[in-house]
Length: 113
Image (cartoon, rainbow, N blue to C red; front, side):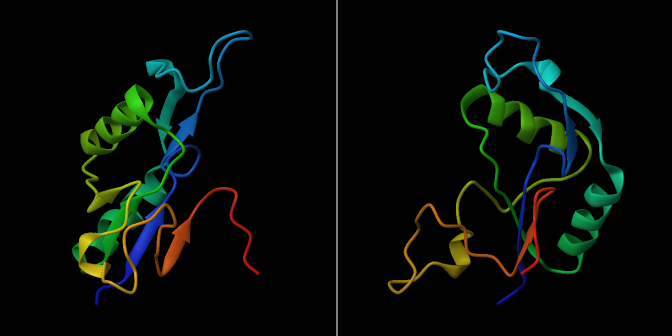
């Protein structure tokens, strides 16, 4: 089984731009996506070339998620799964569920225990 890496979007792959006061945070604002974080994007692409499976694991949904996936695609980063487990690892013992199973989790808020 290849290595599976779950990667957050906001402030991990692209800078997050907060909304103006009173604006719905995850309404799908195109201006919520800032500059690419090239070091992380490049590392993810290299991992994928080396055979790793990538999952975009983000709180974004609907239009906001569509914008995030499109932003990643524009910089050459496409995912094997989005907010879901990669199909290759599913089994009767591990059905698809909300918990993303990965070998590594890349997130700006991560704490190594």
